[in-house]
Image (cartoon, rainbow, N blue to C red; front, side, top):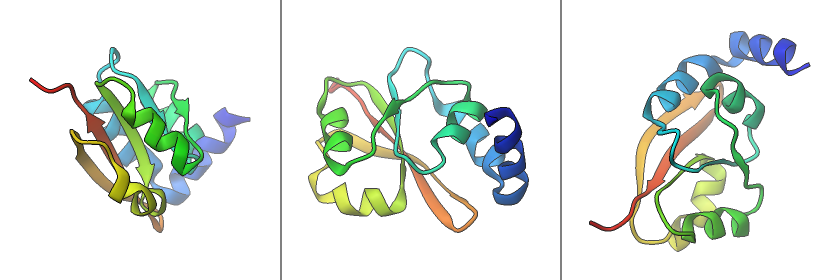
Length: 111
C-alpha cells in the first residue's frame, strides 16, 4: 500500500523533492525522528526508518537524549515546542510540501 500511496502523494504534494534534500543531509549513524505528518513519505523517500514522535512531550524527550540526533518536524509542532527546545538544537533545512512547512532540526554534541 505504501508503495502505491507515496508516489501518488508525491505527484500531488511534491514530497519527493524536499525529502531528497532532507536525505542528503542525514548521516546514517545519527538517530532520526519524525513527527506524524507525512511520516510514511519521509521513510519511503529518505530510505531511513524513523523514531515515532507524535506528541510534544515525545519530541522534547527525543531531543533531550544525548546528541547527536536529527528531527524532521512540521511547523505546527515546532511552534508549540520551540520555547522548550534543548540547547544545541539548530535548524538545518526548511521546506514546504503542499500547504505545510517542515524543518530539519539537529542537535549536536558540544565541541
